[in-house]
Image (cartoon, rainbow, N blue to C red):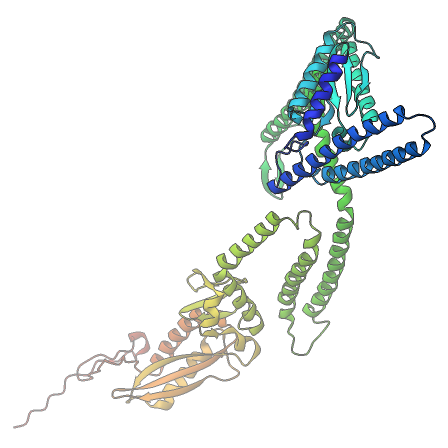
Length: 617
């Protein structure tokens, strides 16, 4: 035993002149701090050695003094008290040095027999680093597992001058220095007692759990779990097969086609197939859950695999715990979001009520038209929802995450630059709504496109031409083009003026021409008689006069039909009174030529004039 104590003291003495830190720091931030720490620690150790030797010398002097040398003894006792004070100051300084490196130092665990951590080693001892010490202590502890002589009180605690040694028989398990005690915020004696108890409990637990009787019980229990698992899987498989059989039997009976209004979304065969796939998926999920829950039970039986059981349970329990805690912590924010949502919901309900009142003309606002109510409501709805989202955004989970914020900025960037053209059309659509240029059903002309408005959206205006062609015009194009509305005056004023021009020769009396054209207008369907039709002579050309007939109509959408009927009636009315309608370049030679009026409008005895010849002698 003396040899072992001498060896331990020798190791401790060599530590006095060590140039490295008593703590193994692998990931230190500043090398200069470590060097300064080593220097200060070495000084403190040198001081401790000097004070220790001085203390031994003074104690020897006291022993050698005679009983009547009281004054000399008091002087020596005062020196011893000063040494005790210096020792306390030295320990305090060392504690401050060690505390300064707690955050940057690295500890090395001493593992037990089942991958469990018994304690941590922070400081070196002699030429052994903290990592070497942890490895050596762990290997010595594991060798004791095969020693049949080991009992509860087999580890002895041997106190030396500066260290405490844990010994089993002739084997030194570990040495505990003053640095170890400071690192663990304890004393050497208390730390040694704790380490002795931890090591003893670990060895005895290993011996108990690896005994033949215990192993036999554990194997039998594992076998019982496997048998139970097999039975559960078997019955689980039978249960789901029975459910699948019942589903197949109900095809066309209780499981019929699934319709959305008049559209058959799924027929009975497709529904049965979907149900069977869902049942099979549920079966494999249930089997997986049974196996997953059984494995930790089996692993937990044997001491060597207990850490696997903790790991498997941790895969489920840890996320579930984090989710539950996260949900509980998020409840205040969730309630805030709910309150904000309901406030905006009832604000929108109030605005919707006002919109309905204005649309039904129960509420009239000066300068605000009923057809503005719905688009104004939609704009306010979008603005309020955007404002609501701005208020809710800080309360969303993950809103403070840089990734969440980066994705939000990226999506905003894509929306802004990717929809520049669409935004201009949306703005134009809003402007068109409040300009009230046209409404659904109006006959309009936008640029070269003429037809009826069939749809107005924020992006495009759709027009059906008289040939049933659907033309979509971007709203930005509509607002930058000239727009003619034929229906507005036809519905709200005297009516739309329909007009067409006829060229008649100078030989026809203009009063007869006027009357014939007015008669034609009065005969035409969809042209109204009040206000009365009127004729304008628009030009006196070289060979003819241009007569323009003007008549009012309330049916602006039937212009093509009206013009066609009007032109037919003009021909009939002119032919009835003997007025020839000549084209601009048509010349009528009446010397031997037939009139251009159809024969059914001529007298029965009408004959074409003969040629007139005059011969001058």
